[in-house]
Image (cartoon, rainbow, N blue to C red; front, side):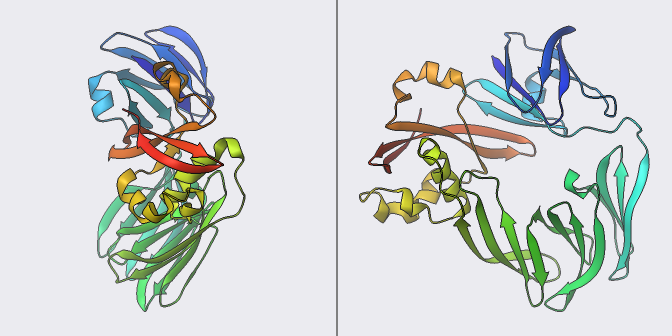
Length: 313
């Protein structure tokens, strides 16, 4: 089995006690045929080391500090959530809303929201809320709490439920919630989205996505799949025979959430797919919390447009 390691922060890696080098945002892989491997991840001095076993249990139910991607009998392990060494609890912000008291804290460096009043709830928030502001407001006359982090917005209902959390470039409220969402994509896709709020849940009403940077020719297949994911006018990438079938493509590709680059091992198994006319991308499908499967889809190009799309078995 080949395991690719990535880390949000540069960190040393030991496998079964043997130093295996530094992991960071560039994947580093290791081969193993063991059923159980002891892993130690040692980040900088301000963060706690992680110790865990990689085994069947790890791949069926990953710990909360890692996102795991399964593909062709191999795996990608992305260590993306660390805990601060100080281990203390610090209050970041506090606000009263709708008869509740909401407190945003850092618990071991991880943001966490505590809501007390009509309810008693506590749950984590993304790391973008490590520094944030909170205020009470309304959407369509219904009360809510708005938490604005670093390029990110969370909306909490009167009952303390998290009804919206997403990166945003800008946002405004009135009868509805309107947000402008930037995506980290090849073509710099930005979406203008509108949501209706009934006091307990947020329902998407409309979304218009647009590409703001033409992709280079050598990554056009990645731009295409990202355009399908975000519904950003992907039909423009299709040849004349496929254009009439554009509306069926989202159903054909399924509910994927990310687009990724195939590893070198993929091309060793499929050498015929390494050509200028045929391009391959990996699509990530959620299985459960922090766990994904990757399927590979190939496109065949002609004259810079896609004339065929198929899953690589």
